[in-house]
Image (cartoon, rainbow, N blue to C red; front, top):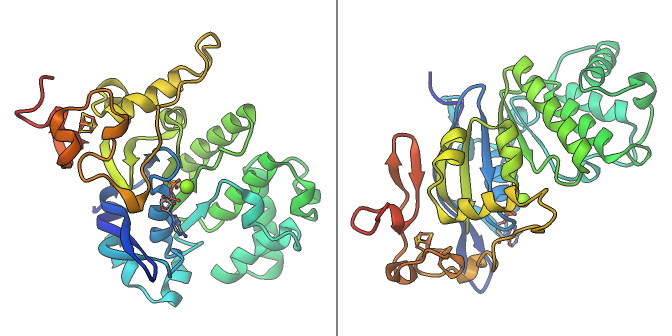
Amino acid sequence: MSALLQIKDLDIELRTQKSAYKVVEDINIEIGRKQTYGIVGESGCGKSLTAMSIMGLLSNPPLRVGRGEIIFDGRCDLLKLTGEKMRKIRGKEISMIFQEPMTALDPLFNIESQVVEVLRFHSNLRENEMKETALEMLKKVGIPRAESIMKEYPHQLSGGMLQRIMIATALICNPKLLIADEPTTALDVTIQAQILDLMNELKNSYDTSVIMITHDLGVIAETCDRVAVFYGGQVVEEADVVTLFHNTAHPYTFGLLKAVTSLGDKNKGLYSIPGVVPSADKMPKGCRFAERCGKRLDICMDTAPGLIEIEEGHKCRCWLHERGYSNG
Ligand SMILES: Nc1ncnc2c1ncn2[C@@H]1O[C@H](COP(=O)(O)OP(=O)(O)O)[C@@H](O)[C@H]1O
Ligand code: SF4
Ligand SMILES: [Mg+2]
């Protein structure tokens, strides 16, 4: 059986009256059935835009897909679907949860009507069946006093509770793919762990594939089977999660790892990779990470490395791993 989602040669462009440039470039990834696939990288690396292109929600203009295909379920290219067809898939077969549940929920409607709304659009259930299904779903995501919470409004609930409601809303139609864009970033650490546990549990019981987007390799370790590391709008390393952590290849991934392992070491303080992600309109012509890389070679400044397979199922975009330039 084919992969659930195949992103092929995807470029996303930003066009203004003055200029046009790629903000995401040459993405090739495959999400397997029942797989949790991580996309990790610092802010500004193109993670959310990639997710929005899958959902058909890029804000056009100024953003648009310049090239590529996104094949869903082996049956259609999402980029070629009409708006109407995409609306039928969105929320039913592919759903998404965001970092800030407050922005996704409508402050004017109570929780019940917002969860029921999804069923109204995508199912043929009767009114009382929809309410029952919504209530059952809220219980499944661990909402206490679910009957009374149904009558409450978003501002009356905590961030952790709202994120559970978003998860309930996203899973209520039993989607094949759930995209979670930094779902725990806005939550404190204890609640973060509870939400990740809940997602792991639900994913198993619903057989849903998940794309987990995060800046934190710790979240990847807790949840994912495979991972793509994004930097400057490109994939710089891709592997199964065990390989990524135990046979790390790209200097940027090493930097992200160091940032995770320094957490909790109070004497050292929090490590962050020196420097910043280059902005998309000023991408260097050589390696995009070169300015910040402690292992830089001469070639790195002028010539961009390609993404190559360095061992089976493990890709890396770095001159250190190109034959003839590497010593390890
Ligand atoms: N609507 C927009 N207009 C202009 N630039 C944008 C817009 N959305 C995103 N970008 C730019 O595209 C790049 C990638 O953005 P994004 O996918 O949101 O990054 P991430 O989710 O990894 O933090 C960033 O450099 C950002 O500044
Ligand atoms: S290509 Fe060069 S600059 Fe880029 S990550 Fe590899 S060693 Fe560092
Ligand atoms: Mg983002």
